[in-house]
Length: 622
Ligand SMILES: *[C@@H]1O[C@H](CO)[C@@H](O)[C@H](O)[C@H]1NC(C)=O
Ligand SMILES: *[C@@H]1O[C@H](CO)[C@@H](O)[C@H](O)[C@H]1NC(C)=O
Ligand SMILES: *[C@@H]1O[C@H](CO)[C@@H](O)[C@H](O)[C@H]1NC(C)=O
Ligand SMILES: *[C@@H]1O[C@H](CO)[C@@H](O)[C@H](O)[C@H]1NC(C)=O
Ligand SMILES: *[C@@H]1O[C@H](CO)[C@@H](O)[C@H](O)[C@H]1NC(C)=O
Ligand SMILES: *[C@@H]1O[C@H](CO)[C@@H](O)[C@H](O)[C@H]1NC(C)=O
Image (cartoon, rainbow, N blue to C red; front, side, top):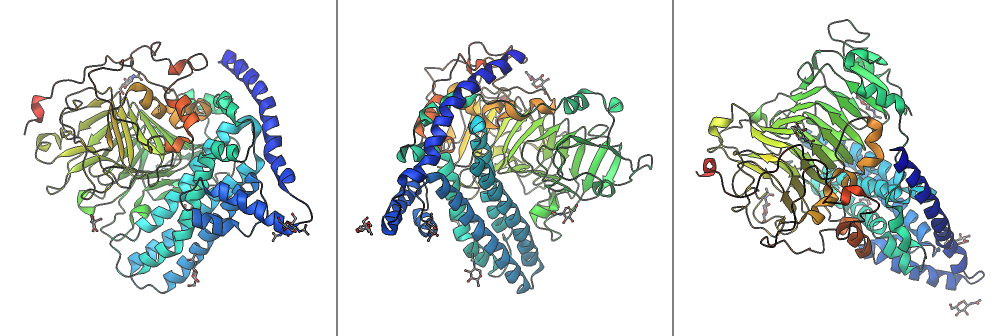
């Protein structure tokens, strides 16, 4: 660790020198590009720059329209202006949602518009923090800066989409009006994400030198390691000195979590521990975004339980059904159970919704039926958790990695079928997806006897670019041989991205898998980017949480098999990574000297013996 750290410091030192040169060039464009005293020349210079920048985006007209009134030709300033423009439009749409709301009588429409207002605020926050971070342009943390901004802008897109999701099955034109209202905002947010994702290309086309060295920066320093936090998390619950104690048997200072909430410090830069003693807490809990660095610890996931039963059928929109909602960055929960007990007949009923960047759940249970875990936005990590449910029970548009977790399929209604995941990636540049690694997918004992009658699948595409990767996991015989299920007719079958890699168990055989273009057969070097270190920047933030995790593959990696026909790389496969050169260095030629995790041959010692992918299970014939 220490040695690595030293190496990093040296590497950063060297890189900083190169980067300072680059940034000088970057910021310098402004002065060089400007011809003082001739406004018409200014305008044409600026227009050229705008057109160059807008080339990287999908909505070029909206891009040019919203930048053309500016008179700078500095790409950095233009990108900042693009963020600002997106923010302005979302704000306007939020205001319009209030106006629309006053015109509605249908309570579902009212409630959907209410959510839109809240979601628009969250999107605006993400644009604002992206703007701030980009403006500050932290040279020593260039890659971290880019990842952060990509994740946040992606969330800003998701929040707008979630607003529109709220109008499903709502009568009247409110949904259509809201869609109209968000159109430009959505386009500009997407453009912002494109500009940042393609930043090396953008800067190259502005003749900004130095970006060729970007690869050198791939090992940024981790965040500060909070020693206190580490100690806290490695201790046994009885040894932890919590900052606040909740106990519904009256032995703590508070009887409910909501009572304690008001005494949790806002915007704390240190870990703050809320200990929730054994008991069943029947309350709706929301950890707002100001409660950063919060740790909640229970007495175990079957002992400390937070439960509720809000649900879609009884009139709450999916977003607001969550028993517990987490919006506080750097959040961590340990030894706690989250539940929505509404039951399968109540349809969507979320137990836990997570929209918190760098959030972590360790030894937790999430129990529900339809839509149990809404892994909504940002980077999330789940370790040793048990998640139970029926339909789409892990869904959302975060970048989430599940390690050593168990997904338990429960018995649904007779006319339903079960789907473990419904990932909701809307755009190809969003760095999001669900990754299940060394997990177990199994049937609940009550469901087990009927698993061949009421069928189960690995996932289905909630949105156009739905992305789910299941690797090094155990798939029990409840999963249908076709593996994946369509959402609606042919929707997203070409654009989704589903891969299974090095799995084992009776349902791991892929011989009868459905053959949509989006269902991929991948060699290890194309799966590696979905492991924790690369996909959610785990090495930057999980060490400070003190939770064990695997940064890369955990099983010995199988060699490329000449008999296997691998899927060709489609243009969208790595669109979220940015330009060709970075992609190549990322995907095709892992840099073995600097990153041992990428060295497949020296992979970590196996904890679980891999079993071959061949032969179909007799249990599956039905
Ligand atoms: C400004 O530049 C334009 C062309 O870029 C030129 O036609 C015009 O004469 C210039 N005006 C002055 C005052 O220099
Ligand atoms: C153009 O730039 C100048 C100086 O940079 C500034 O004073 C002026 O207000 C700008 N004009 C517009 C239309 O933004
Ligand atoms: C908001 O509503 C006003 C008035 O109906 C309209 O002119 C404006 O274009 C709307 N804004 C957006 C972003 O849709
Ligand atoms: C924070 O959470 C509470 C519920 O716990 C909610 O009533 C309140 O509006 C939230 N505040 C903000 C600023 O989101
Ligand atoms: C894989 O998961 C199992 C069961 O959750 C666990 O016991 C094992 O330690 C995990 N293996 C590794 C290498 O993490
Ligand atoms: C399913 O797709 C068809 C077009 O393929 C569309 O008309 C219909 O509205 C969709 N249904 C749902 C429930 O989304």
